Length: 317
Ligand code: CP
Image 1 (cartoon, rainbow, N blue to C red):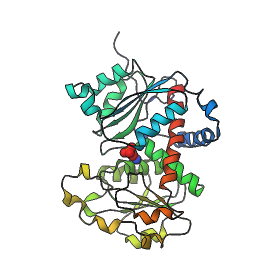
Image 2 (image 1 turned 60 degrees about the vertical axis):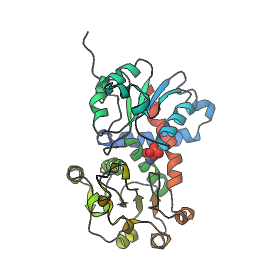
Image 3 (image 1 turned 120 degrees about the vertical axis):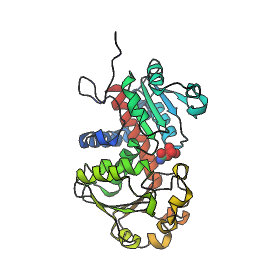
């Protein structure tokens, strides 16, 4: 029999893979956020029944702390087990030249879902149709990181009580920062959002993404001073420079103008929130952490529950 290629959704219309924020509906976002709230309240014993006997494979071709450990914790909290390949570029048969579509075919014989971080932007999405089990994008090169965007939106809703009608300021490396790409794509689903872009000259949003977001109706502002943008922001989404992806250090010239310091945080609205996907290098001064508006460690915890909700949905349907 010829192989059956599995696309974004199953014949029953249920989601098969989670590869891009662009194919996530607002209804799914709302459903996963609601379920994350419920899972947060449930006893650990009840949570462990949800994925009892399931096996999830975690394949990480690039370094990770939060995404890998939160997904692995989420599987275990749901009663499942994890098989893992860390540093997979070196420690798996990728080293021998195995193609990702074959990896998905093989790992799909062992596991009920595959969580994967890959160093290339598009390879995962191209190979996913060959997987017999759901594939979840845990970060793809300088492309996308959809579950980070989901937990970012979940954090905004938990902190501010809504996602619609907000001024969001995204700051740092908008060119290579995949979390920003997925977050803005997801925010385009919400109403009345204005996004102010603050970045070193060479690290703006990719042109194609910018055009797509504009076509989807997301209001993008640039050319605003850091001080004005911060004073007007409901959400400040700070990011690190992706030094590992820069063509040369020159691309990051001027980055020091986009640092969050206590002086700058003092100008934020009392109700504003600071988010960061982490890891932080030095783009947010450590003294800012004590400010109640600094939400980035609460954001980390939210990621656990949101990823539990996504895993449950994709593995159990
Ligand atoms: N936010 C994020 O993706 O962090 P890690 O690279 O540590 O997984």
